Length: 94
Image (cartoon, rainbow, N blue to C red):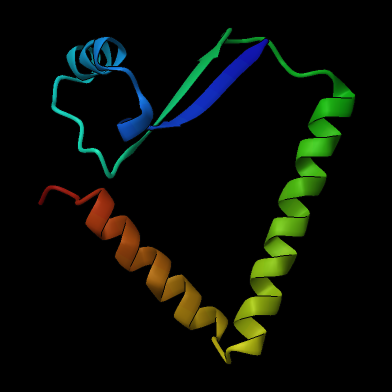
C-alpha cells in the first residue's frame, strides 16, 4: 500500500509547516512544494497496477522522444544534459 501527497508550502498551515521543517531539518520557502510518500517496503503492487505504471512510463518516454525530435535535439545532447544534471545534483567526491 502506498499513499502520497504533494502540497504547496504556502498553503500548509503553520503548525503542519513547523512539523515538516523539524522533520526535514531546514526552513521551507513559500515557493517550494512538499512531496510526502508513505509505503510498505517489500510489498509489490498487484500486476494490473504494475502494468498500468509501465504503460504510463512508456507514454511519457514516447512524449519526450517526440518533443526532442520536434526541437531537433539529438540523443547525444539529451545524454549530455542528463549527465550534467546528475553531476550538479549528485557531485562525486574525488
